[in-house]
Image (cartoon, rainbow, N blue to C red; front, side, top):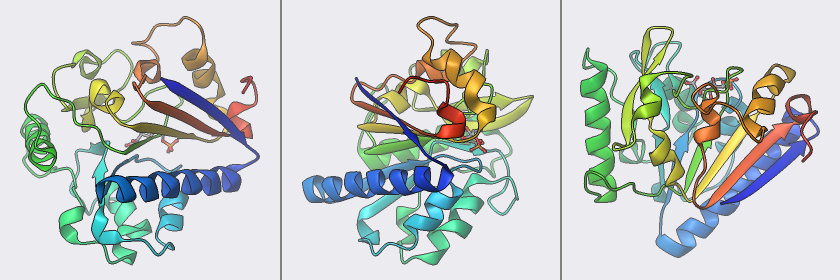
Length: 240
Ligand code: 6PG
């Protein structure tokens, strides 16, 4: 695994750098394979990045967007990661609706929705159960408890290694999430982390030894590339 840690001056620089990195990966992927597959993070940090991507002139028909996790709410709910990305980006560009691979959240049963999303991914990637297809880029955030996607500390989702998608649990609220082996299959994993409130979690994630189940970001070890893009507020105590 090639791990790169970059500490950017502030959130504006962090977003500019993450845009630049993603556009490079996008360009290379489309040149090499004719398409680019990207899994989005939810939360607040990536919103300005999605707004910046929306300003770019890109071959939208060759770009496929997935979600690394989703709250178990309807797509028009204020907490929906899909809603955030559509408002910030996807509704502003000419991307084919079939290229937007949203997480199903209307089955009244998170396990059914997780299985449906898994099936959708297997169909898209022509992969079989037990195989972990490689997205070009998986974007991730990190909570101040060192969770990522919807892989929360000491939850069952951290034990799932034979599937692409599982049901996460945040304080009893169900989420749909990529499993960590599926994230680790990606060609590039890019963390975007901003804010001083993330420092204690980052210290544990970067520590030589700590409990992986207490700090789930520690489980993210892609065979290929791992980028940590941090603003100075978050990364101040890390030796980059
Ligand atoms: C979600 C996210 C989650 C997020 C972190 C960081 O659905 O909330 O996928 O994993 O990335 O909680 O969130 P912030 O960017 O808001 O700090």
